[in-house]
Image 1 (cartoon, helix red, strand yellow):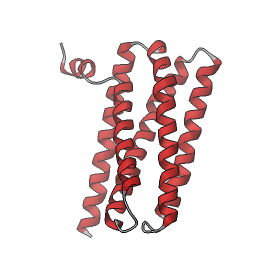
Image 2 (cartoon, rainbow, N blue to C red):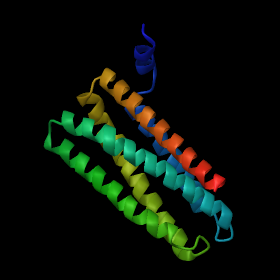
Image 3 (cartoon, rainbow, N blue to C red):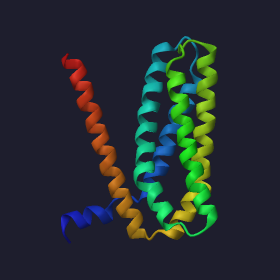
Image 4 (cartoon, rainbow, N blue to C red):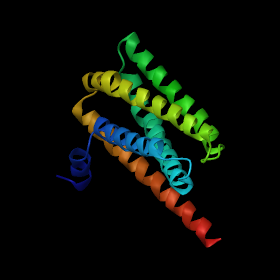
Length: 172
């Protein structure tokens, strides 16, 4: 079997990758929620990690998974799931800058972080219980594996870009 084909079929499918992302972000948000206003450095580090994870996750969903789901959709409810998921991403994109602009030692930060956690948990739960099972019916295993490979490639590219930007900042 050619190497490219073997890599494509031996990887994780799109849904497995997205579930892993959900678990990672849930864990980070849980850690953030447990911090106190005195854990300034810890909160800053967690918030940066959450932002990075959400940014990569949102991009792979918006650019790869959601379009494939939309294109395979057959029912009106499928379209509803698609548009609702996009709007939930939009709301998270609005809230993140607000949280970043709030002092991590403040009560407002804790409140905004809790709202972000609630939004992300709702979004992940809805995807896992409604969209993902429907996607498994609409898309073949090979399609899901191909999407998973594309998503992995995009995430790796985004991570390399981040490392390059950080190296540029350190070099200046």
